[in-house]
Image 1 (cartoon, rainbow, N blue to C red):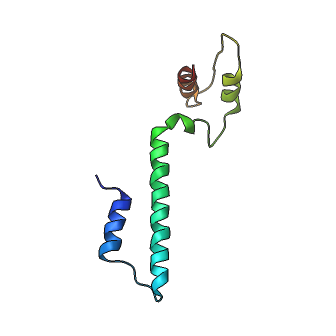
Image 2 (image 1 turned 135 degrees about the horizontal axis):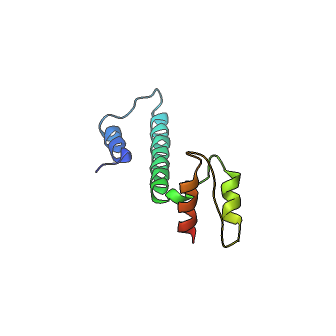
Image 3 (image 1 turned 60 degrees about the horizontal axis):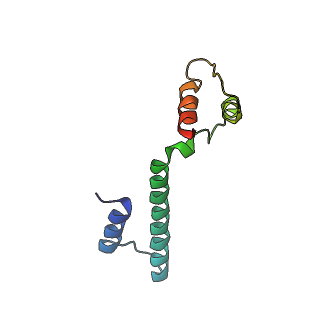
Length: 95
């Protein structure tokens, strides 16, 4: 399976991008290739570590308080789609 980077390298090798000044072409393409490498690395990191995205964007303070609590018996109450199952699953993985 080819990555975006492989396809872009083939495109650049075969067609290239023309600019008025020759030096700009290389710099532009190198910057573009570097950015694509970074994007692919980030996509791979995110796919490999789904647990690290838990409570990352919108922090649910009550869920975090649940995780910090050291008591043996803890309960999670909430309405539909409030994150009870996700909270319990993450707690199970962290144990």
